[in-house]
Amino acid sequence: MTDEIMFERVALIGIGLINSSIARLMKRDGLAREIVIYSRRQSTLDKAMQLGLAERAESDLGAAVEAADLVVLGAPVGANAAIAEAIGPHLKPGAIVSDVGSVKSAVIRDVAPHLPAGVHLVPAHPVAGTEFSGPEAGFAELFENHWCILTPPEGCDAAALEKIAEFWRRAGSTVDIMDAAHHDKVLAITSHLPHLIAYNIVGTVADIELVTDREVVKYAAGGFSDFTRIAASDPEMWRDVFLNNQEAVLEMLGRFTEDLAALQRAIRWGDGEALEELFTRTRAIRRDLIEAKQV
Amino acid sequence: MTDEIMFERVALIGIGLINSSIARLMKRDGLAREIVIYSRRQSTLDKAMQLGLAERAESDLGAAVEAADLVVLGAPVGANAAIAEAIGPHLKPGAIVSDVGSVKSAVIRDVAPHLPAGVHLVPAHPVAGTEFSGPEAGFAELFENHWCILTPPEGCDAAALEKIAEFWRRAGSTVDIMDAAHHDKVLAITSHLPHLIAYNIVGTVADIELVTDREVVKYAAGGFSDFTRIAASDPEMWRDVFLNNQEAVLEMLGRFTEDLAALQRAIRWGDGEALEELFTRTRAIRRDLIEAKQV
Image (cartoon, rainbow over all chains, first blue to last red; front, side, top):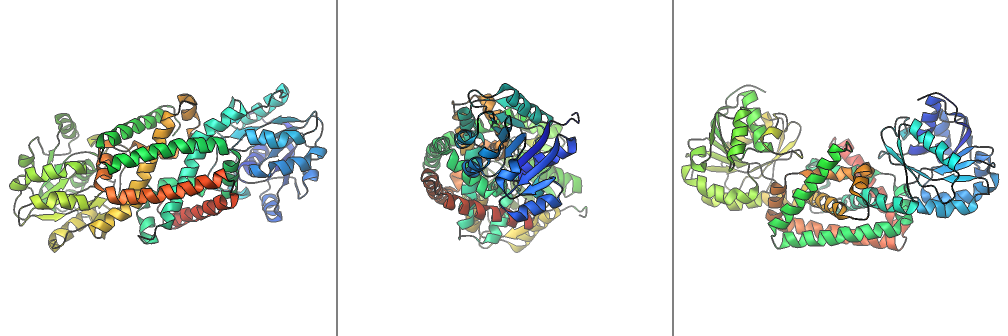
């Protein structure tokens, strides 16, 4: 990675896990001359400034994006429409507006209408994260060896797209470009459905009064603990993901539920062959992931 | 751990992940004067002997348990009834029969009727494992810092129970004693349901033709890969767990399905509050596990 300024002024809207990691990365590699941060909460801004993540903190959206050549939306995706409306009139001609959200059609739907002509929208989804959140949770290496998916809307400015792609390559990510609707389907399968199922099973287990809490905790290593990591992910962020990728998530959930009904029936009727057939098939998937170095 | 012979002759019936780990541990710490192994498959016996796991391999069940003072059943639990019937007449008076299965009521049901008077049944469940199987997958440290649950049937010989408990303490486990029916309920929640759900989601994703296999593998780190580890667990073993803990598993699955229907409804109707409330609750469970050092 070469130390070379890519942006004069970057405005990070929201300073949670992802945007605070971007701030650290930009500081470490000198990619921005100036970083301005915005958060709804003054306490978050104070914490981020104490951590040295930015030159300046703004609690006004318009002031935060003033003269920025890159604006990165990093709040829960449900907040994007209101944020875009507020920043639209303050954006510099030629500015790039990007984001880090886990859904992409909704981002284009909510943000594009508020951007003045000459401002370029380049939606991005770094497929990286941890179960921790807040400005203190970020780290510059978060994106290394992960994918970053860009979903340029029709007519997207090629130079702006390439600049964002270059930024993510410098972050250590491999960049993939696809249509927003396709992104939302793929991620519904590989990320949104797994999160939903993990949240659900952890909720179910938490509610069970048959055994003491202590026993659930004691024997969690038997399988349950594997689910708790992703079920500890940021509640607001995930609320908005499900609300903004409703159709694809419900479609995948329908398939999951059908398959589960068949599995339930196999257990009830003692159909060992059906069980073994499924369990043998799923074992092979793990091997594929190991070969692809994805686990 | 003191090097002190606990058993003159140990017969390990089945030599997969768990029993091969027991063999390694007994050899490392000199806990048995002689280990005899049995497997249905000659190739497994050959491999285990090459690995130096035993003094002797037997392909006849009666010969394998002859004069053993400890017999450990380590085949998938569905095989126990036939194994117990075959070994019963060959067991030495005073011998202890134990096992390592993930269900316990079924083990007592299937094994106890075939044991002659003076032979002591002490069912055990070491709550430890990996997604790998076979004699080459074992290691002596597998049980360290894990729980081992003993479920002595009514009238269980106290000295035999204490001897098995002492063995597991030497293996590095913490021993817990409970009723078999209670064990099966607790484990249905903390282990069997999580495995079932993991198997199901991996199966659902594998079947989806909307996206290429390559894409599922590429973006698995977004959440899906967390499920693939436990969905790679031994197919035969897990088939038998579900068939032999049917009632408790179906009961837990019913609760999971009810909760999932409510979650589905919340997504369909855009009930963000319900989603955020659940996701906040599940996050707290993770904290409990971390505090209890169970993750």
